[in-house]
Image (cartoon, helix red, strand yellow):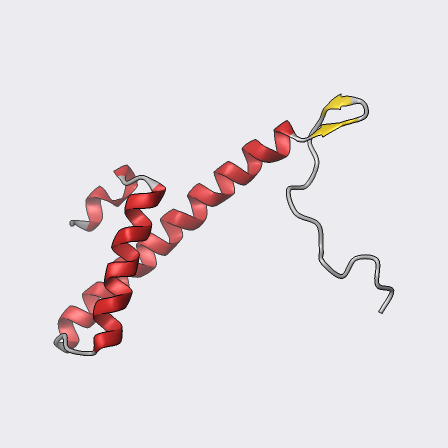
Length: 85
């Protein structure tokens, strides 16, 4: 799959390709030049997935309901917010 087509991939397709790249790199049986190309493609896919997740998070923030109707709230709250430590 060419890197120029990455923008057209769905999140799921990008994740599948990224998992395939990771598996190949973990096996260690690829030539150095191929490993570098795979690593670069993997980084682009990782950024693409991160961007898509941020878009979804923004959409979810806009749909969280409160007492005053629908208003924007943060998607995630810190885990240790009320511990006081």
